[in-house]
Image 1 (cartoon, helix red, strand yellow):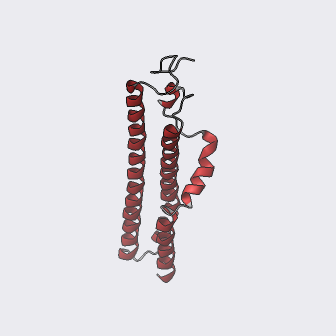
Image 2 (cartoon, helix red, strand yellow; image 1 turned 45 degrees about the horizontal axis):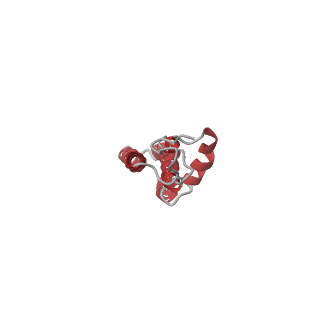
Image 3 (tube, one colour; image 1 turned 120 degrees about the horizontal axis):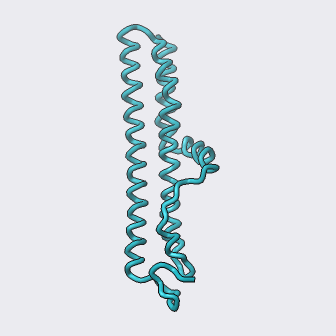
Length: 153
């Protein structure tokens, strides 16, 4: 089988051009991972901003029921944050797999593709990401504070 950048008589190693493309592919994965991590931070920032604004409105207008709106918003932020983390994990796995798949029987063209996660993967990974140390320790105390604030008001 003819492989990109590898002459038919050489099964050992791809040429320098293919190695350069492979390095660029790893860089693409790293850029995707960095953007997803950045998006996760933005989701948390927006969550704190929205909840803080709702707490201020609730306190200034003496309407503790507004805190329940903040409590209702938390699952949306949590789901979005978990989604970004699950995508980040997928691309980390793909990046690791890319490096791990480079061998003598590798079809080099396959290494240069960037695929998103399969559709059957999402819910399992999403719930796993929601239980992550990067997600639930942020949202659980925030929700608990909103509940306590509502109960005490």
